Amino acid sequence: MRILICDDDLLAANQLKTCLQQFFSKSKLKSPDIVIYPNGESLLADQNAKDIVFLDIEMPGLILTSRKICQLITPQLRYLYLLQTCFCIQNEAHRIAVSSVQ
Image 1 (cartoon, one colour):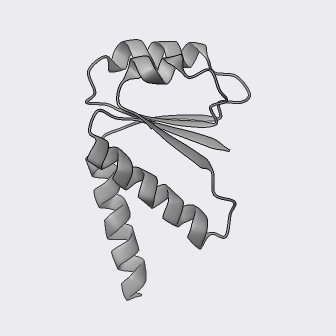
Image 2 (cartoon, helix red, strand yellow):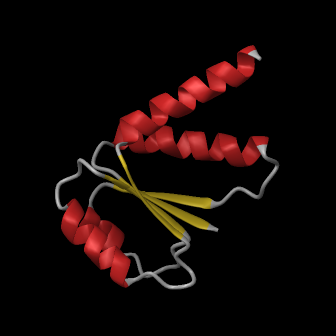
């Protein structure tokens, strides 16, 4: 499996990558190849398989990038997520904290 993260905030992108790695590890699933791109142009230049793509909604050029990604949707690209990365990370951190307490 190959997961792509496209976010101009590299700190947030790396935090999401860490959350995904922890999820796969805790779930005892094979760790996917997770690649970070700082902009839409570099993501679109990637000619390799794309199983899951995360796009930051506040990233410049998002509309053009998301349109082009949607044109690439094939059986290989299973999921396209548009997200506000900081919100996603905060929710994941909260979920982990709550599950740790229970």
